[in-house]
Image 1: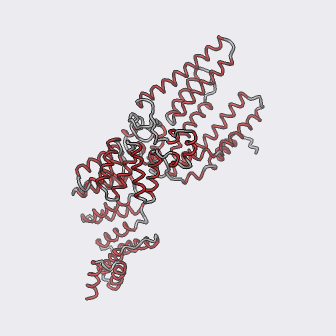
Image 2: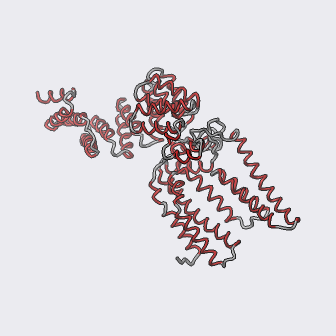
Image 3: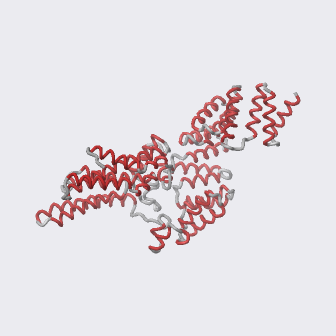
Length: 538
C-alpha cells in the first residue's frame, strides 16, 4: 500500500480506525452507561450548581467522600457527557459518534507518536521508519480491543485519557528539558481528570529521565536529569495527594464491585466467567445479577430468592434491597417491600431510586411521608422524570391539581416520550373543562408519540366535545388503526366512543354498527348497551 502524502496517510488511518468499529454508532446505552450517564443527575440536571457537583462527585454521581464511592474522579469526561446531553438529550447516537471521532484521532496520534519514536531511535532511513510506524498503526486501528471502549459510552474516559497521553508526546518536542518535563506533567494531570490511568504519563516521563540518567557517564551531566526526575515526582505526588484529600482517602473496593478480583484463587478467577455461581456461590454480585436476570424474565420467585441471598452475603447491598423492594411492591407485598426500601435509604441516604420507590409504596398509606420521599429523590437526582410523574400522581391524590400538572409537565420536559405523564396531563385538563389547552397538549404529545393509540383516543374525545367531528373521527380511527397494526387488542371503548361521536353527529346507522362492534368485544359494556338500546327504540 503506497500513500505518498503525509496528510493522505493520516486521513487513511482515521478512516480505517473509524470504519473498523463504526457499527457501534447504532448501539444503545449499555452496561455502566445507565449509572454513569442515563441516571446520573450530574449529566442531566440543569443549573450551574450541578456543574459544580461534577467536581465533588465521582464518575457515577455519588459524593466522592461517601464510604461507598468508588473514588473514580473523571470530571472532564462527565462534562463531555453533560455537553452531549445539553445538545442531544438521551439520544445515544451522538454520544457514540463523538467517541468514534476521538478514536479516529487517537489512531492518527498513534502514528505520529510511533513515527517520532522510530525516527529518534532507529537506524532505519526516514522512509522505512515511516512505513514501520504506518503498519504498526494499521494493526492498532483494526485491533478488536477497541470494541469495548467504543461499544459502551463510558469507554470515552479511556479514549480521552489516551488522546491526552499521545497528544502530549506529539506536541512537546523536547522531552528532556525542564519546560518539556513540566508540560508533560501538566498533561498527565489533565489526562487524569478524564481517566485516572493517564497519570502513567508522569511515570513514563520519569522512566525516560532515569534511562537518560543511566546512559550519561559524567556526574555533572547527571544533575539536570536528577532535577527533572525530582520535578516529575513532586508534581505527580502533589496531584495524587490532592486527590486522596479530595476523596477522603484511598478507594475501598467491595467484593460485589469486582468479583474476579476477590475470587480466592487464580483458577477461580479464570473460571468465574464460565460458571460464576458454581465457582463463587458466596459472591453477592453473582446472586444480584441472577436476580436481575430472573426479574427480566418475570420469574418472580427466583428473582426474590436471588436478591435475598445477595443481601444475606452482603448486609449493606443497597442496590439489591432496592430491586427486591421494587419487586415486592409490584406484587403488592407492600409491608415487606417498605422494610427493604427503608434499609436501602438508611445505608445510602442519597439513593434517589430507593426514595422514589418508597414514596410509591407510602402514597396510599402516608401521603405526607410519601411527599418527603419524592422530594428527597429529586434532591439527589435533579432530572428524574419518573419521580416527577409519581409526584404528580401524589399531588392529584392530595387534591392539588395545579401542582400535579406542574409535576407532569416537568416530567415531559425532561423526557418527551413519557407517555403516561402526557396522558395524565391531557386527561386532567379535559376534566377541568380546559378543552382547548387539553387539545393543544395532546397534539404536542403526539408529535413525539405518533403511535400512542391512547393519546389519539383521548384527543378524539376532546375534539368530539369541541364539536370538531371530522377531526375527532380521524383521531378515533387512527387509535383503532394503530392497535390493528401493532396487533394489540382493540379496547371496546374505542368503538363505543366513536359510536357516541356518530350518535351526536346524527349518523345513527354508523353509531349502531360501532356499538355492536364494542359489545362483540365486551358484551358487558354498560354504556354501549344503553346507547344502542336508545337508538334502536327511536
